[in-house]
Length: 75
Image: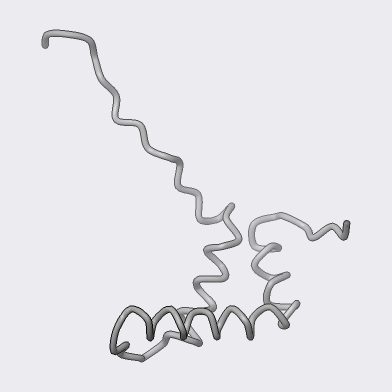
């Protein structure tokens, strides 16, 4: 081995600590489940619609936070 050693650094992956993973899980089971999208814009529209609906379901969003051990603190 010649030269200086190199390392392959990656960002840590911790889906248990990331509330976004829970939100994507909900979207995969509801909004985008069992669908074939005509084009990327169709997918984008479906995801936006799902996120819009999800923003009013506080119990689901709270569950995504609770799964990570985080708590919602009002401002």
